[in-house]
Image (tube, rainbow, N blue to C red; front, top):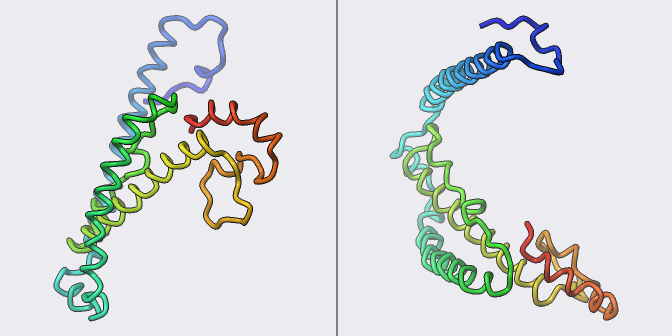
Length: 193
């Protein structure tokens, strides 16, 4: 559907006809976009499947060292799952009591790479595992950072590597006056993203 460019001239009072035309144009554009995405997606998946490495070829290419260390890597699924469980319980029990907003776990635990057509089954399993483990750690870190801001928003005396995103808001180590001035504000904003 072609739309006359003059249609997009801003009018102080749009009439029912122009509104209907705009809605029709928007629906057509959305449908067209979805069709294009589906076509590109189908073509892309076909290209990706051509690049997929066969499972047996992949298994044969894995070195002995990787095979020997794999059980140690995958054994971490138990502690990671326990962290996930206890962090979620902690949040649901404690955050409401402190007035801290809940963290959406799904913002941190994102598992989607297994849908990639160029990965074989073992690579997909590895991606699921890494996505879950790193997502849970990021989720737990966000819970811990909100808790730290609520209870102890003070920077360390020694520079710490890899501080979380809230750390820059914390009060300097030896600044007692600023700590007392900022404590209530920092506690109130602990639940903000």
